[in-house]
Image (tube, rainbow, N blue to C red; front, side, top):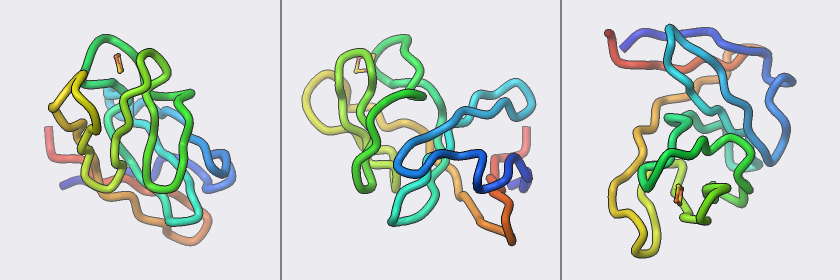
Length: 104
Ligand code: FES
C-alpha cells in the first residue's frame, strides 16, 4: 500500500464527498460524523460517478439509480448490483486526509 496525502480535511465537505485524482485514478473521499471514507469514484452498477451522491451515516447513494453502498466495506444494497466498490483506508494526519492505495 502507498499512502497519498491528497487534501486538507476542510477541502472535503461535511456529510458529503469530493473526488480526487490520484495517479489517474478517481478516488472519492467522504466526510461523515462517523469518520472519513475513501472509495473508487465509480458505481459498480453502470457508468456513474458516485461523487455528488447523498451521504448518510456510513452510506453513499449512487446519484444515477440510487444504489446504496456501505462506505466501510463497499457492499451494495438491493438488487441492481451485487458487486462491491473498492474501498481504501483513509487516515487523518493533522489537518490532512491521506488515502492508502495498492501499489500500481
Ligand atoms: S449507475 Fe449507480 S446505481 Fe445505477
